[in-house]
Image (cartoon, rainbow over all chains, first blue to last red; front, top):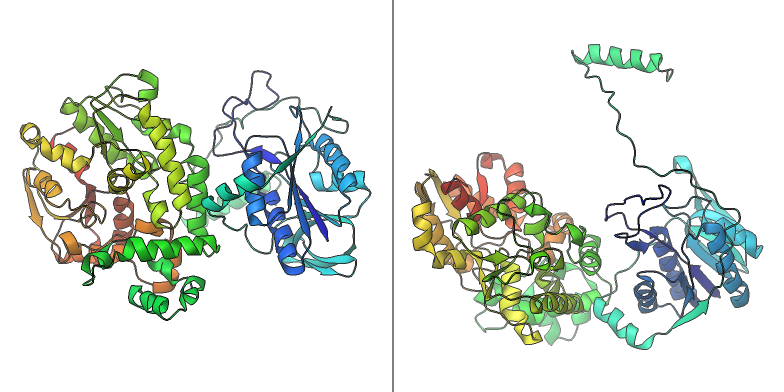
Length: 253
Length: 354
């Protein structure tokens, strides 16, 4: 069972985000990148599958700040192979990323591709469905648990309203991971340092990005504060009546 | 606690220590050093048993999620709170004269003030940190801080089993220290004090270091004339584990409090070497939810009850972990309603009207 986990890094929201002088993208001077949280879960789910049923886990990322640390941590968790796509990824979108990854994935011929179901900086759709399209594989998203069957996987797919569906998917397939069956495990720093000495990151150069299918940002701006607040006075009943009236006026009721 | 130290030693002797590591009771330990202090056989229980057991549990991935987040934050942001390292000196905003951030001014100073994580970032502690800055200015001390170049001292993380992470913090702080000229280090944080004094030198980072209460007590004759404002209250002083029991500093904080006009010092039933921990050490700061689930009792509440029983109006502390912990306990204990919690620096500043 060959499982590949392609991941991406997204702006770290701990730092304040500012918009650069072009007005359409984030200023990168103080921007820090962090692993997409859902991709972290995808790695955990892959390791869990390996621990349960054996197989091989390959984790792949794009050249980026924090990429090596992340790959070594994945190796410390049990990943067998680490691949880093290198090149100029400035301005990359998910279509371009999916194309870059699909080249690698076609070569590696996986049984299962796990990737985070979404990322907070997705503008042109999520990586998973795009990958599935370029690979010609089925895709199921919002997966929070899976079991292996014969030549297939049975996934738990989350729907709104607390509904869960079990879906059988023939392999090879791409799954968009919502949550791993357990939270991403902790790896002691000494273990990561140990792995840095032994694990190897394979570099695969990528020449030229095909951004076709992406969106053009016309303007990026902070939410603009408006002043429109009314303080409602009176007892609970009077206030409740007024609230209902406001909702009706606004067409919400 | 299913396996207290005695049972852990028994388990070691009987060769079923792996049961202890599989269980999570070791995470009830807050590395307060009480067991080490009172062991009649002089076994260094905290350092040699509890910390080592926690190291094994971390390697096995047996760790409550709250603590995991604090350790991952330390690795990524240099502080367990998960705040941006760039904002580490934001507490200095508005202070006049401006606090000397060494990386900006590059001026040599007499004293490098190692502020610490909670003193830098925690909203409750910023007023105490600013108070100390004002006191140092009033005394004419030429000091500087590392600001964004300062990393967590790493001591609580070390005691929570993350030796590797601690070593990374030592390396990074050592790198920063080497860049600047200063004669000594003072710190607001007893955990940083403990690390800088007892752990860092073995790793090649060795400077004279004092806790701020020691530094100010040395200058008590200069300080006394400035303490003009009366602070009329009965005050109980809580000996922080890492200042008191672990490092023997009991008298200097009391000397400072004794110099404040109007204060009447009362002692709680546990004091000095048998002081009760606030529950924050050894990872405890990030295990409150976990420990509450297990024990349904809090060390901080126990201590606040003692302060109330001693008749105190103010519970005075000297560690940045303590005010938030004790103030939360005051909120949950019925009779503690009026008890105030104050860092010594805050009380001195009040007495100095600054």
